[in-house]
Image (cartoon, helix red, strand yellow):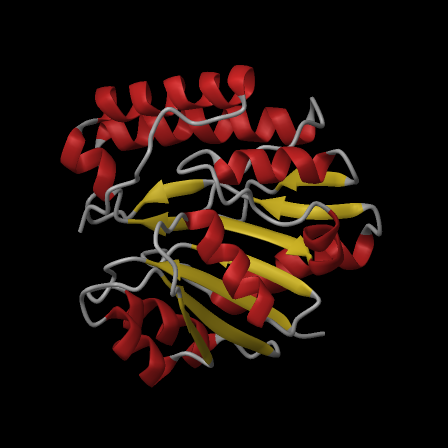
Length: 240
């Protein structure tokens, strides 16, 4: 079974090579790495072409993460689609994905798996530990207890058939497209949060703008999408 790892990018020349190599050099499971770029103004696409199996570059006007992930999925050949961000670090990709894939082998009703995110140990602060700890607990409770899908774009693994059945990510949402996607998945099957599938990243946005402001942005956009079916934010400015 082929695993397709899809990475949406926007101005990621500093991180994308390391992320791709971590997968290509260490992952022995049959896989392909697909980079879906938002027509970055830096060398992201150029670097990706040197290292990824497939590179897709957006040609339209306004780009969103949902468009990036959907474009990557269109180019994928795998039965299982893994969506990760460009700055994600997975310490042991083989063990990680073997565990993740085993969930699908053992449960035919399972349509999506996600897991906790943490800041990289080298940059992690007490605020990171507290905020991500709370966020992970909420996502775990929603998936595993309430059976209401919720996920983060840092890591989501889904069946391709389920992805296509819900028509992928909403491309009109600048943010909260990941949570909305997992929620719609949970309407057609079971979603699961595995606490051992931990991914790490640089927590760039939280460190640049501060946790208080980031929580406010997340909260107002979550409320807006839930109540009015649209996000408040009209752009998700990259922080690099």
